[in-house]
Image 1 (spheres, rainbow, N blue to C red):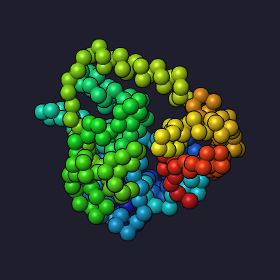
Image 2: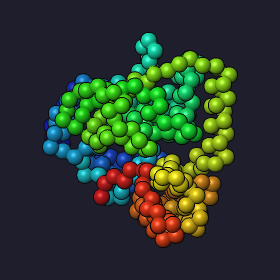
Image 3: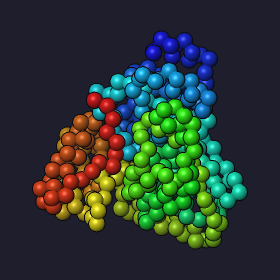
Image 4: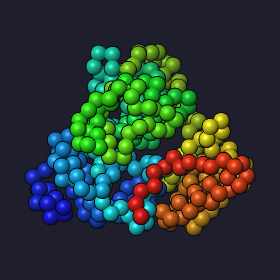
Length: 297
């Protein structure tokens, strides 16, 4: 596999790196290496790589949010969609968005064009591909509220279009598999008041600045909210605010955010999460479910 990639690398626009220190590319800024990392330039080259990867483990990442690469790394191929998947265009009453577009950039595009109901994406650190897969949302809105259909390459290597209704989009989940690669998403939209859109964006920005440690090495919400509960509230009432493990700590600003103070290993962060799960379960008999993705060994 490595020899094959070396042979074709000079003929492609995609960037191939062996033994890539991928953990440093996540928002936690820690973790292990990937055996092979490929920044895929466009869909044509993605098809080439997928044909080569039929018997290989691979994983697709976006902006490196909601992701923890374990310290021993990932013994396979990590794909990241590049410039060829970074396009936004209005088609009649829909917005077509490439999978590598940042959620915040889609929100900016919507603001410039006075398109409403996309404001919540300004508060989500990630890409549209990830937002579709996990039905990302915040401040009372979710991806499923505006998503119409998705173009993807499924786990069988086929390029398909799937209506949003067939994705079983629920709270922070869908029926898409890890090996299903979102290429683009189609959103329905309506035009709105530029003033109201701007007010919503300012509100979200102010709320995040006040309540989330957005300037720290963190990966966003660590755990999903259990039914009828807020994870942050359960964590705080379980005495976990400020809890530490190694150089990882629970944020004083928002208890559902774990922070790398500077030298935390991926194991520090994962073990801190496990301590939180144990404490919350012992107090409330509620089992927290990870929202961040744990990858590797």
